[in-house]
Image 1 (tube, rainbow, N blue to C red):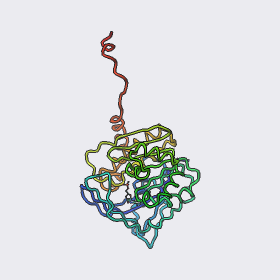
Image 2: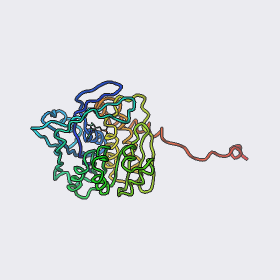
Image 3: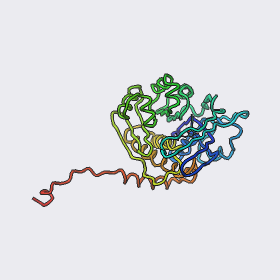
Image 4: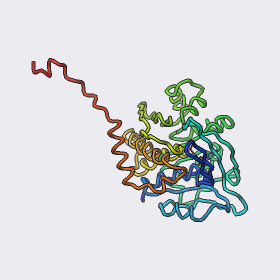
Length: 317
Ligand code: AMP
């Protein structure tokens, strides 16, 4: 059986304001970015989410064209799709939420189709921890479950979030969220705190400053891919998670070496997402684009740390 990756999260229409301009009613949502990104790597991506009657069929077709299984998308005929309006001023790593209309996402009760329940890899995209927990209650013996979260849940559902973290294999969040959640003043201490809550893996997203991975007592740090111009960072975090989980699903493993490579794929796919509004760049992305940038990025981060021979030795003493 081909290894599969299940994602549960939001499908949305976004209004995006960045220094590069405004885009209205763009396709968005955490599960949307994640699944399109992961589809470049994982053999099978299974998507669970909810939309209203206003969600055009062509977006469902777009998922199918990337072999994303849409059997888990619930359509609520009497409802409207989730809407988010975000704005970035100078700091491109933090979106200011201008408005949110939860609509059908407010009552989202994920129902995992029977055919999806044995997915070995699972991503719980940003959502309320109680909703995320209902997914854990429905899946059967997954190999690796990664959960995302955000400041809203840290502030309003801390107890539920801690219970969830205790049950997952990995936690992914950005550096400010980690500090807020842990009460620590630096990310290393914050990651140690998070690991003590139960997960084996903590991934920290630091926007333009890259990412860190804590696993099995090891720490891995990578820069971001150096982009000269960021058009819209929305979805970079979910694309990062999609590249990360997509690679793990493709190789079927969760060793340190697998995760280091997964971090590279996450970094590279997130960089493409930032090049245009919404999912536009992901829609034109090819596997060759990804591999080219992965090779370039590997060169950027490789360091030769062989000790330099002493001058006398070099002179042939
Ligand atoms: P990211 O920039 O990767 O953190 O994710 C951006 C996406 O998250 C946007 O497309 C939004 O539609 C979606 N989003 C924003 N707020 C929420 C929320 N409270 N719950 C779920 N998804 C959200």
